[in-house]
Amino acid sequence: MPKRTASSMSEAIILREGEMDDPTDTLNSCHVPTTTTRRSLVTFSAPWSCTASVVKSSSSSKDSPIVKIQKLGSDPIRSVSGRNFDLSTSSEWMEYVEGSESRINSEGGAGAYDTMRCDLVRNRHSSSVTEVERKLWGTKFHLNRLRNSYCSLLKIVRYGKTNASDDGTKNDIHDSIVVGEQALEKALEESRLIIDALLEEAELSDTMLGLAQVQDPNNSEDLLTQLIKVSVLWTPPPRFYGSNKETRFDDTIIVRGHATSSGKPFPAHRRPDHIIATVALPRVDEEQKESTFDDIPNRDRFPHMKVAAWCRLRKPLESADTYKPPGVGEVLMVHPAKDDQNGVGQMEVLEGLTSNFFVIYKDGTIRTAQNGVLHGYARHIVLKCAETCGLTVDLDNPVILQDAAHGLWAEAFITSSSRLIYPIQRILIPTEAASHITALELDKDELDPEIQGKLMNFTEYWNVESVDNEKLKWSSPRWQALFDEMLRYGGYS
Image (cartoon, rainbow, N blue to C red; front, side):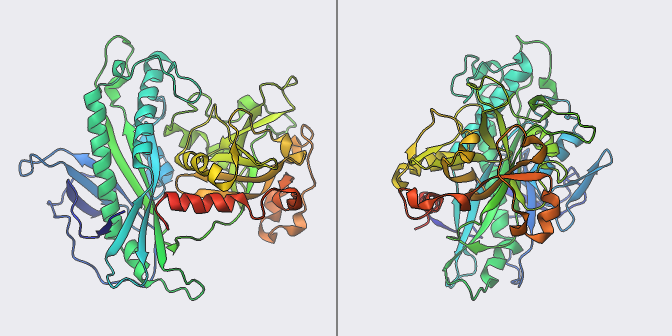
């Protein structure tokens, strides 16, 4: 990939507003060029986030769209209807949009969105502080999925269905019925401009400059990466929501962007740590009332779509009092397997709340749900790289939770665009659900004392350390080989 510098010019005029109290404040700044005077270097890294939108061209720039950039600053908390939102995270930013624009009752909430990963990479031995290589993962993939998600959302609004298959590949309702091609192309172009403007702002920020100051005596790797999460949101205009199915209402697409970074650079080839995952099984409440799968939030209505409403709907599953206490990295969603006669026995693992889920079986096959889930970009890369790592892809058979207890699993991991791969150390299930499923005993003595108490309501179901590695066909974990291949796929040598 070509190297970029922080002074590179974008195709649009960028209007930088600095830190403001309200993301919806009227513009009060003059136009500034994209070449910005370099500030003095900082000696620490700090979280960074900003938003972007395209505003109408002014008389002085008729041929150039203007991208409005707004830094969220050190206090990104905003309130709507008595509730606070941390706008430094893309999920709460979209919830804020949903609440501030009264879209909480709209199908899909604030609209359709997609999130992609960008790595700002700097060689620590580079003579230029400003020289940075931008690695943007799967732009075409993400924008195509965003387009499809948006069109599917409008079809649900208008017709109550998408006529799409579970994986979103077959669709009998043509996109042009709900939105014009010209509007889609304009939204795609604005999305590209917003992405580029957000990344240029990141390259000019103290977060990027902090890359040059990182000194880690325990790390000898030359390449340092600052990970930027970029989200693009497409929102239907309020006038679209109508009852006349034969008339296409205003098909203007409101395009907005959000970017965030932890401000903590890391070695480019550093492998991720193992995580703990829980399974969102029905549980028994304090009044001994047993819940069902219908009581658990799910994405059954829009499995192949990425819609902002899911950020709000999944909140009950992310609570420390339900399925995600401190120390838990992801919550896995399951449903009764189709061939299960009792409706309580065999459970198919679908996906995580924000990730895809994979299992490598001891026979050398790798499985992930094919239907009823969102097909992520990292999932796409894993399936491409699996054969290179000596694995056989099996999309015909589901991932059955009970296969873990039967000793068939060798490894399990999750994938997402921003995280690539996270291997799973342990899978826990709610203790009150253990009566439905054969479970192992949770050895709490091995857990971090700080999280022992929070996990008292869970029972260990699977532990990678219990796997008999001597019977495997490979000598080192396959997730590590897949992770290394994913880096190569992304342009790292």
